[in-house]
Amino acid sequence: MTDTALTAPDIVTFGCRLNAYESEVMRAHAAEAGLGNALVFNTCAVTKEAVRQAEQAIRKARRAHPGRRIIVTGCAAQTEPERFAGMAEVDHVIGNGEKLMLESLKALAVPGGPRVAVNDIMSVRETASHLIAGFGGRVRAYVEVQNGCDHRCTFCIIPYGRGPSRSVPAGEVVSRIRGMVETGNQEIVLTGVDITAYGADLPGDMTLGKLVQKVLKLVPELPRLRLSSIDSIEADPALMEAIASEPRLMPHVHVSLQAGHDLTLKRMKRRHRRADVIAFAEQVRRARPDVVLGADLIAGFPTETEEMFQGSLDIVEDCGLTYLHVFPYSARTGTPAARMPQMPGNVIHERAKRLRAVGEAALGRFHACEIGATRRVLVESQGLARTPQFAEVTVDPSMTLGSFADVRITGRSGARLTGAVAA
Image (cartoon, rainbow, N blue to C red; front, side, top):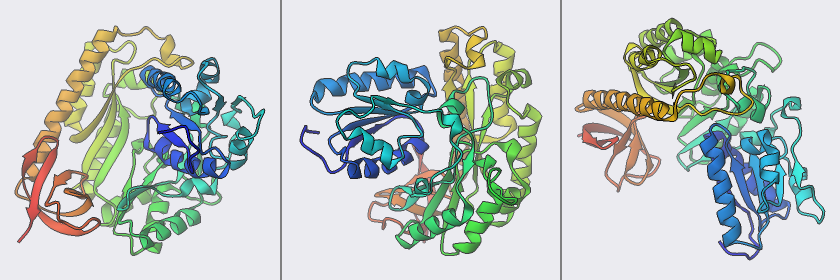
């Protein structure tokens, strides 16, 4: 990067796919607003470490580029605006509601623009149509269909950074996906903060399952559709029907589980219990025998005993989980869990390590069972394809980007499978 004017700003993105998605919207709007020479930091608030990393990156950027304007936004800017406003390196702090509004960005481009513009995210009631522009590669792309969250899990700061749940109308989702398929995307991932809450704020009786069925019916040329993380307790009958009957809906379900012991789940204020998730896993497998399940799990939640943690270890096998996203618990100021008795840091990280090891073993067992099978893969990048079950497969680098092929799984290399085109 240099200090000369740019067509579009440099954006440093922290955290989730949704943040990365929104950075692309900001990039276009900031360029139109005349902020091409800005450095934009789109922050994450999930953990204290994510906030610390953002602060560190901002200080480093200021030293490297003393003449450029630094704008901080994202979930951490929304929940802790004073923290970033207090940094001498920062020129402007804007909230999650403001970052996607062209007029808000234009206000920063003129002399005397507001240093801090962070409004009440809870007052946001609509998801602007521009949010459903696709993000991702030329082959596989993400479409945001929902934002915000109405639940109040005791460990989570995200509702205060994202605001209430709000959905993009189904017709707009279908229109955008149709356009993306026409430009070459072979796989679409529906994403959001709490996508199983989709439709509750829309007129009529819309649900995530009904949206999935509508997309597959109205965009018959779409080869593959996936879902990001879902809340299993919110899975509606239409979604279960789609999982069972729609071959273009990929057999990979990732659930927001968080813990495997009922007392921990109760203290987290989750709406499911251990038996609910196990029953959901069994129901999904009956409906779709080739399905692969993944889950988010937190290690070291406040008051977690060894017995309670063992429940999280055990649920990996009890649910037949393959892909784990493991998070060491991180206290977030303003959440109820931050006021509970905390576990020692070394215990949290040791438990996270053990949980990851169980996840790696589960993935290894899945990979071992795949060897010798023939899978229909989608080539996502040079030498890399993906199976319907979301497994990465190293393939011949000469295979055409965006093409489908039947590949025989020949082995495993690290976290990936290896394969060769079936004869």
